Image (cartoon, rainbow, N blue to C red; front, side, top):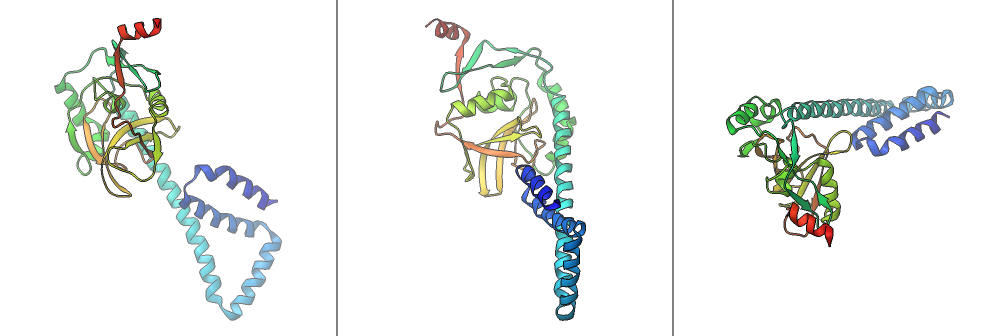
Length: 274
């Protein structure tokens, strides 16, 4: 019975745990199954007794491997949860500095398939000096700036990260609109990364929280990304060294640009009457 329960639990969890944690979990399941099954426990005892006569070192090595594997899995799982918690905390602190209110712009975006993308502008944008003071005191910026961040542009309220990528920093774009852009502008997810690819970060709920552009690929796991951090500045940073966490994926399109089409409201009215 315990074996069936174990298999069921593992099946449900396979899509939500990392390979390292899965290996450790398997080791733990083996130990748990042995401990909770009297027949297997008896068989193991007899097996150990037999091997103790011939090769006791093998038994010791096997048990050591199981214990180390379980411990490694538990430690790695704790590390992952800690990183996610820190990422969420930093995002909350960064979001707290976002413009308090935006209004629809007099322009609107359009995907290649004709879907409207709402563009926004800040109601009361802060001046550069105030934003630079906010940037200097920002906890996420302080966390990474000394070792990882290269500042490529000043802070401003005109655009967020998505607006910086898809409108060249002219407007704010909501995260939910990024999914529409990916679907309708022929983006495909890639694993062989190239300069110019789009990197998409997701939060713990699987929602898109940040976007940036790959600038340099030194090796498979050594990637430099340029992105705008909320209302803060534009930074060049290693893809895994940001307050947006480690859950990211890469996309590519053959359009030659990530910029969406921009039309005026008057044009929108004309299109709706055609």
